[in-house]
Image (spheres, helix red, strand yellow):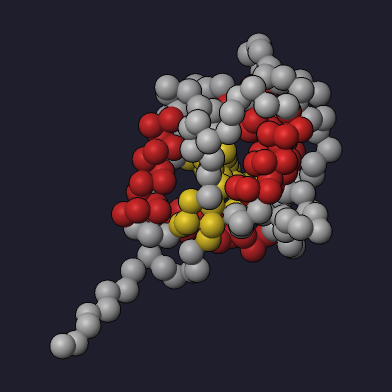
Length: 194
């Protein structure tokens, strides 16, 4: 009996282990689910290393949450994908996840970084975003060339895989900017300021 090997046509670059950072809101959760289902399950171009809802108790200390995310989820990931909705920039956990993922430590290597603007993100012009309504640490890294930002409208697996692989390649070629002050709490307002 012979076995049939079917190759994945999208695997032009290696599969990367992805941590997806996003705002766990009713508006953004379906996009996160769709992203992981499409690219991890259907097209098999990523391996998800993300925190699932309910896996981390919300009442534990801040530093314990940060360490748990870094040591149990980010440690094995090679690229962090930030899904950007209307209020993603306000979330302390998104800030911590970005900060932890771009930090090089003895036990945890630095991850690549990219952002994808979701349809739930408000904007007047489809091609532009307001820098002050995306996560500030992500914006700083777009400015220094460590990260890039893309639009959700492109669900082409080959393009998404290329974005991820390019972020992986940049992680050791460009020095990230992790200087933005860490969020202590979730933020409020219409935009962030330094």
